[in-house]
Amino acid sequence: MIDLYALLLLITLGYIFGQWNERRHFRSINEREQALVNLVTTNSRRPVGELDNISDVLLVTGGAVISVDYFKRIVTGLRNFFGGNMRAYETLVDRARREAILRLKESCPDATQIINLRLETSSIYKGNGNQVGSVEVLAYATAIYTD
Image (cartoon, rainbow, N blue to C red; front, side, top):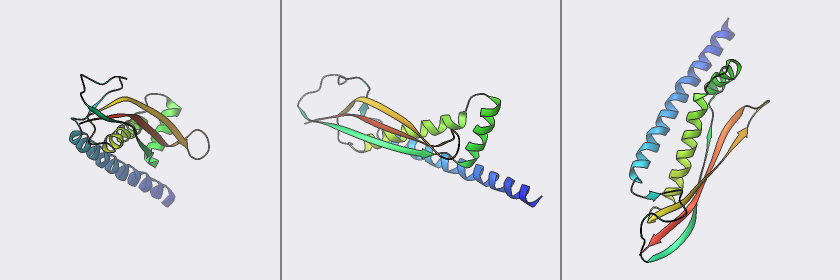
C-alpha cells in the first residue's frame, strides 16, 4: 500500500511542479513577446512596405528544446490508449515554437524587419517505444537592417 501512496505522491508532485513551470514559462514568453511586438516579422519572402537605405541583410536563427514532464507523459499514454486530442503535447509544441521565434527576434533586436521566417521541428525520443522526450524547434529567417 505504501508503494501506491508513493506513486500517487510522485504523480501529484509531477503535476504540481509541471503546471507551475509551464505557467512560469508562458508568463515569460508573453512578457518577451510584448517587448518585441514592434519588430515586424513575416514568412513572406519580400519586406513589408517600402524600405529605404538597406544597410545589412543577415541570416538569423533561434532554437528551443522543450521537454515533457512525467505527468504529461502519463496523461498522453492514457490518451493514446483511449484516443482523442493530446492537449498536453499541444502546449509543449506551442511553447517550443514561440520560444524559438522569440530567441530569433532577440538575436537581432535592432533589425527593421524579419522576413522569410521558417520553422523546423523534430522530436527527440526517449525510452522504449515512441514516447516523446522533448520537442526541438529551429526558427530561421532573414533580418533586414536599414540606416
